[in-house]
Length: 376
Image (cartoon, one colour):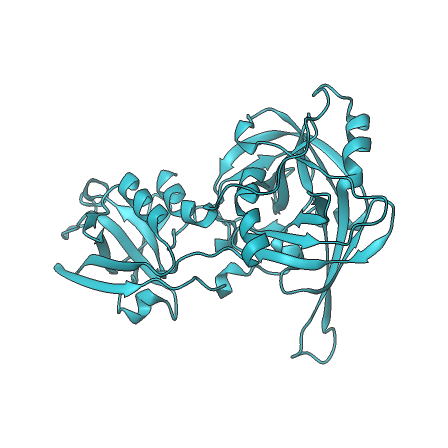
């Protein structure tokens, strides 16, 4: 698990939030109906359309989801897959009034997006942002949203898992998620997951197909870290190297394979057009499964970066966290038993095809025993 987490840190890094949390909420023993009455006015219905220019019929697709107001000046937080690359994004308030919104920023990798709506004369109700790091398994949570377009629906459950890394996820959901048994359905996407104080602790994002009441939410602390970048830049700026793979150690594989190995980052795939491809790094080509986990062997093994070894998770984590757009990176790697070096400058990472999920992002198909390949 740790080797997945260290490479995910670069995806969720951000600066301190500029949007303050709302004032303290009432007693956490507040009855559920009263909690719903207090919080639901801040939850909105979101609808948007996309047009496929390459089709003659059925060119228009509709997206329905949820969101919630996080500031009195009209900022609305939701999922990226509800609005990203859609047009005519409409927001329906609790009073039934529908208004057009502006997309402030979106990030398919974290599946988060920020909208802005005009502020009506009576003002806007604002949801309180809580602390997802304080969640514990077994804690009661409430989801409010618009499942199947049914407005203002509440479901109740518990936190059934935390820091859940899904081996079935596209790259866009490779981050620690909150798992809950509160019922989540299409249309809930982007709505708030609340603790019993009525504070938002997560943004509901997906369910696992074939399972019963296993849903997932993006931790609200992740959203709080990236909101300033949405507001300032309209996107999250990340450096791009373009390799995916995993850390290996001799002791793990030497007993299985009868050929020399070095400690480092095993390059399994190279992203097309990336700095890694232009530098001539090689990905793997020999698929091997060990205890249900797939390895692609035969690629380069990166053993060092900027003169520092990358032979354990802590060193790898430190390297990943240090990367910035415009940095010069010098990689040391082994290929077929020989040592090589390459140097290049990191550009900004673009949105890649693998970042964009199918239109029904809400449902993840179960594909057990598939390992995640961390990426840079």
